[in-house]
Image (cartoon, rainbow, N blue to C red; front, side, top):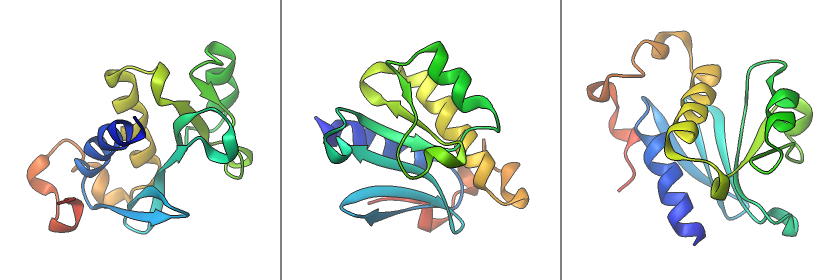
Length: 129
């Protein structure tokens, strides 16, 4: 089941310019340039979530969690920096794509932000074969 969720997130992340994937503590993490923008967490320390952790705009974390605590939560480690956890079992494709794109935009260098919607702008490093 987690593999399906990883593949779902991987497709979204690697479609964005200059994105790469690495493993950290056995879980995939996606980077733009050298900055992490999406972390996968499969039942991290038995928290019950199959999730991604992503940065959100300043002040958005509390509002998202208040709006839908089943879907959004404050993740350990990065939650204090304003990141939000998103339970992948409770989010649709469109909303997940929005959050992945937003996280990418928050972390990408300015020179890349205009390339977001241009698939031809992807570099070979952005592919996962």
